[in-house]
Length: 357
Ligand code: SAH
Image (tube, rainbow, N blue to C red):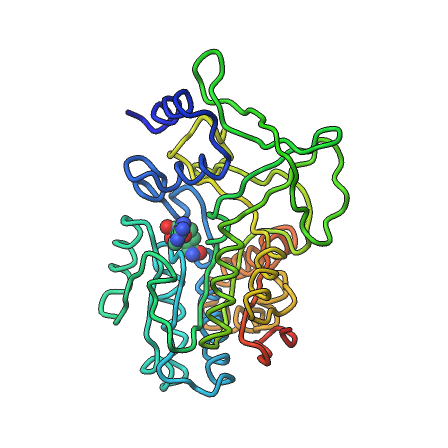
């Protein structure tokens, strides 16, 4: 039975689903979930990510990791971890760039945290010959050594619950079944909601997203940073200040499609709630640097001179490199919507960021 039909039967038997339950089923249902069965990244797939736009992205992150490792006092061993590594391009570019410091890779115990079997297969193929371990969750990556971690577009896969402000209260946005037997939006009552610190007073109709999964990851990373040391770079589209908005979207072949009409067939994402992730990490004992936009972060790491050097070496590709550069940093492309947060052990000033606190 198709996922939508199974969800309809489940809702009829047990009542409506929260947005988080629905999104998790669409992404990870073992039979029909998008990541379990048909993830398609890249120009020919459903969505494109920064490492697939240009090798410059992964190379600069590789150099960021090397500099952070040096700043940490060259720990050996350390765990080099990527969460949600997609088709393996980012890790492949990181490893190539990291060879500038000959001591870093011999000290690295490399882990990919991935739940998608088809993507694990792509990662294994792209990174063949490298000494890499896979884990299904961060908890499976052994503790006891500093962690240098990167996750690009992982937070946006972690599903929120959504709440709609009515005249004087909150109602939860739910997925239910309509009179024609199709999936449809519904509302359920809510007693009280913890408003995020610093959020403005809500106006009727506004949507609040609370993402337990993103907060849990912030807390888990924070606890690891406090216990074992290191730094974690989280890159995603999302908000840098608490606020409202329904950010759930489904993408198929680079087009937005109806969230309820495409269960399991499209990639579903939400914005990363960076303030909540950072607060959870701090509460667990880590420091966090002020959030940067992706454009600012990459420019501080020297992406403009890097693009110029690549273009000088390959003049026939200069126009393409310029387009890729703008895609990553221009404010009207990925430069401002995407943000970069760094969680780390206290006392560190991570490259490109100001002192973390
Ligand atoms: N980082 C890659 C891919 C982003 S797509 C890039 O930038 O190109 C999201 C990635 O997160 C995929 O690899 C997906 O399988 C993985 N993912 C989704 N939910 C996850 C979870 N709960 N735990 C670990 N990985 C997850």
